[in-house]
Image (tube, rainbow, N blue to C red; front, side, top):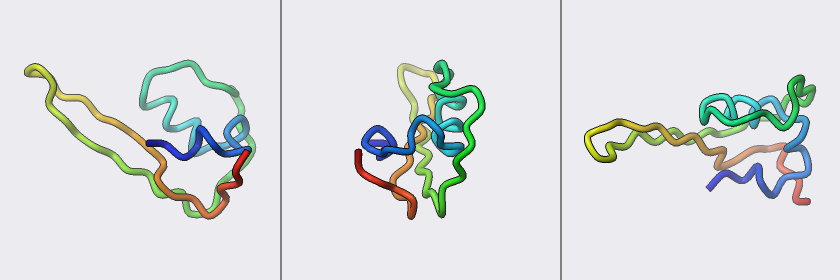
Length: 67
């Protein structure tokens, strides 16, 4: 699970912007200006019904600040 959903920086975060891009979803902010410290992005490749999918989640970040 992506910890960004519980972080107060989510609207401005460049790491979450990248996760949104990889998931193909609309961005919360087109021009994020916050660069997080040491985001740890977990990338999981999985096969689903003869097709490959990729799941991106931020699992750790030194800038995490709970909402």
